[in-house]
Length: 418
Image 1: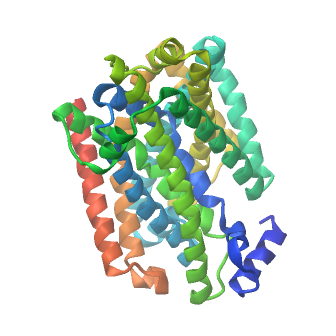
Image 2: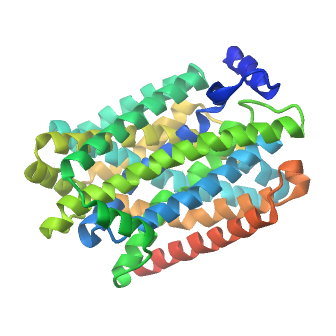
């Protein structure tokens, strides 16, 4: 592993030689990569629709989803720190070979669906910004995704810096949109803290928001990002690493949550306020241009492009993790990227509506969430596997409640959509 100086500084932190905010520096990064999954184009589609249909009503769903995400990602990170293995590897060790193969196949299907959403989102961003037809835009997206993967070859710090810079661009794009939209502060506050629905369709959208927020591949990936990055020599060091990693998780999830809130807020302030129901991202782009000017539309298109590019590369990394973990096989990351490009290119070539493809990808994701969440809670609740980092009883209880809620809502989403 590269970054020897980072390992030395991390050890200095663990030895108590570094004080203040600098203690965090060696531990920041993994959660920012995982958080990209919470900013993918599927989120754009569900959040813009929610804001245009129901205004600020469903902001509380994003707050709740993000709180769940903090717990889920913390369990995944803790599993990697405690065991030195990622979630698929621990599953292979504790489940039968047949079960591991099944889990690998379904996780690959989930990642293909994820990649579809992200690839189409990035291509759509290019189309909206530059008028490039979808198929050539998809080919440009492919080149861009290979370039981001090259950062991983240069080392985890280069990758983390690149992904963090891309997240920052998305944050700035939506911060600008919120400022321009002039939303109602009182309505925002009420929407964030008042749980309520307005009919079955609002429940369906809430399930969609949750499905687009809690992503199976992010659960698999986070454990791999922490398993060997900074290795604790004993239980005491592992506990210290986890506490510092929790800061990374909270910061990253707060940023991802703020962007998702901003999507709904902007949609509510511009579309809902003007009586517009916007369900297609290309329509959203045009309405942003008409209602608040071309710069706002460009900010939206840029955010969509960058979110799609960064999250597609993270999806490819997750695919590598699940294959290596569940069946102990690995293919070249660039070969994997080339293979996963084929389905979205085919869908774009056949002229499928991009937003419809995004929505269908979320349905496929809904099938996979239980197969990541349930093993995660099982393993982190086992003292045999986790040692001193085993979940507390209240953490385990919360994990099972969240798992039941997420799985139930996703089942509801599947039933309603069919």
